[in-house]
Amino acid sequence: MRIIDGKACAQQIKQDIAKEVATIAARGLRVPQLAIILVGDREDSLSYVRNKAKTCQSLGMDCQTFLLPDDTPEADLYQLVDQLNHDPLVDAILIQLPLPDHYNSAKILDSIDYRKDADGLHLMNVGLLHLGEPYVMPCTPKGILSLLTTNNIEVAGKHAVVIGRSQLVGEPTAQLLIRENATVTLCHSHTRNLTDFTRIADIVITAAGHPRLLQPEDFKEGAVLIDVAINRTEEGLEGDVYSPRTREALEQRLSAATPVPGGVGPMTIAMLMQNVLDMYKM
Ligand code: NAD
Image 1 (cartoon, rainbow, N blue to C red):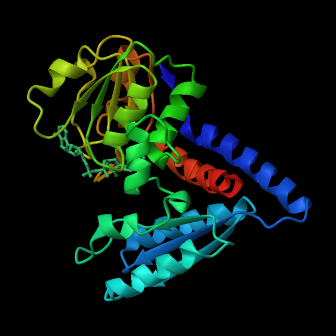
Image 2: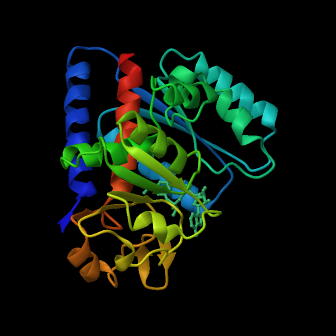
Image 3: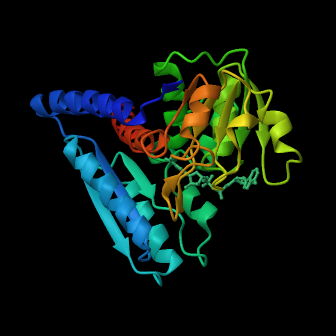
């Protein structure tokens, strides 16, 4: 089985971005800029935001971070987004999710100018993706597709089973695969007999967030596994399928798989950086 090395692939993408940004700076032009808004003080969100800002700066791009208290009035949030929408120095805006429960997340995401929507979650971008003409792609699905392409894993004509239908991962991943001419089955928490589908799939993409969701024998011989999930268990980080416990049996069964950690995770942030640069250019 081939281990699909997301870390190395992401590193290469980031190096290419840094080179391009250095060329922009050397020409005396302003560099791309990302604005990140975080509302509330969730530890995990704070660490994701810090990591994104740090990565952005390490590639030579600018990043402004707005840390707002949990009780920020919704009107103030709209005002900030509006200000960033009109700021010619800001190319991309990211609102760290999840927003605290009392906010209307969908409405706030839709208040971002869709041409600055770094995560591709604006209604307009979701619609364009469904029409097969994406202006910007959501980062995790884009990272998954990039991993498949760079590892020469053919998608056209293959049966891909996507597990999970969130707006962030499952749904847009299924859309992208359809666009790449795969035959796609989208499974979710109401799917009966999940393994009936996984056993006949050429490619299985799991994003359910349930450790031990599937066992190695639930896959066809030679199938490809993209394990998106990041589950914190007593034994450390695990995917829905991939773990130190299952690794050996997966190696016997599959032709390729992403590890957890080190698979899809690093690609998500690399794709965010790519989106910022692309939005700057557009
Ligand atoms: P979510 O909770 O919004 O969605 C989970 C989806 O899985 C739902 O559509 C649900 O119907 C489905 N599901 C749940 N249990 C199931 C079951 N037993 N059988 C079939 N389907 C089931 O989560 P999300 O935001 O889409 O994230 C999913 C996982 O991916 C999480 O573990 C998250 O940490 C991870 N994630 C990883 C990255 C990355 O960069 N690697 C990015 C985003 C999310």
